[in-house]
Length: 480
Ligand SMILES: Cc1cc2nc3c(=O)[nH]c(=O)nc-3n(C[C@H](O)[C@H](O)[C@H](O)COP(=O)(O)OP(=O)(O)OC[C@H]3O[C@@H](n4cnc5c(N)ncnc54)[C@H](O)[C@@H]3O)c2cc1C
Image 1 (cartoon, rainbow, N blue to C red):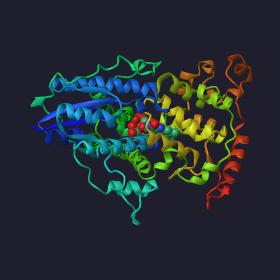
Image 2: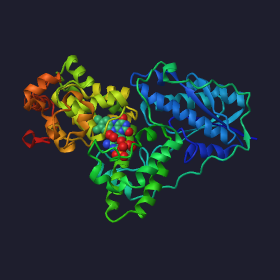
Image 3: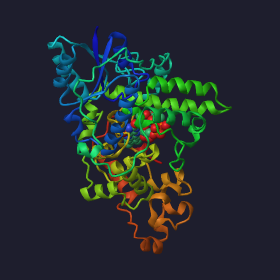
């Protein structure tokens, strides 16, 4: 009877799980394990809210496995030490895991592979997190794509594989006597107390979230996705994709069904949502093929930018006290809930880099520490896009005007009014320009703008021009 181990990481589910399915089909006895690794828990970009969600997902995974007669084994330590030890204990012939693409995980997996190889234990990493990984889609020169539109075209030209079957009942469950640690009660026990409430989380919650979105909101996604006050304007699926509480093949398969059932005009919303999911794959392959982005600009010339913003300015941004209502509302929402709408992420990222002239890497780190859905690939891609130093970047001369953005995407001020209570008396879109009513602005205690947008815009252009890449013309400046 062959025993195999499935090592759970960011794939906390029993359905549509590629490596789990492979492990089940290759062994007669399955030992599912999760390892608390201090290198991950104490990483500088670790976030309490994200960790707390991961804990919830683990509890739900443990319960789902138990219903099928499997016992989730929990261990603590460096995976390259824990896995060979466990494999010897349970007499496992092989270890299976789903592939991760972040440089730290890649390095960790290399160590695990070496240790297991020395111990004579088979180790297999399997594609699961994305539909197309690393070098599976290449351009005509045989190189990875660095521009989104042709990447998305190539992505769409291939068929998507069906979801993997759900894990079955254990024929022989792992024996009870295998030592396992209890799961921590909450993220505080891991040294990361989370200061706010969390949404329901786990495999069931992921499926409910997907079902609710595909039942209706997806059909108007193309029109509603840019408006942060619309609660169902987007899917809220991202934390689930980060922790792998839903499989990506399942998402596309259910989207395909929703598309077949679309009301007139609803197909457009489905296509636009599909495009967003392709952005996720795009950034994952960028990180995998160009790992230097984790530590610097995709275009290295931009590492020489002379960022001049101060720590005090960074703190006003972080705490939602810049005096620009849409920026402050977004940051207060992030700090209080761990969530931020995509449009707001672009606005605050542009503001930090192009109004406050502070390095995108400081913002990137803060987002990772706060977001429920912090994901190195998507976050890094979003920050480099906003700063103008990434692959398929908004050129550096595209600069959002935070006030105009607020008026356009929160036209009645509903979102801002929810978070900037000091200004709630200002009617409609006037909330985006408190300085037009100086008496109320002064009485409210809401801060005056920390910078002048026009002045900073010119400084930003000068800063970029000093290091600009060939071909980018300053006279093409765009204000949005
Ligand atoms: C500065 C910045 C930082 C970001 N940081 C992250 C992050 O840490 N984690 C993260 O998952 N997304 C990040 N994004 C992308 C995007 O903002 C979120 O994926 C989205 O807001 C999540 O909400 P949703 O699930 O309702 O998305 P939906 O609009 O419903 O989109 C569906 C899914 O597509 C993916 N997706 C959507 N937009 C993008 C995008 N631009 N790039 C990559 N994937 C995308 C997500 O997995 C998302 O769940 C960032 C964007 C910016 C501009």
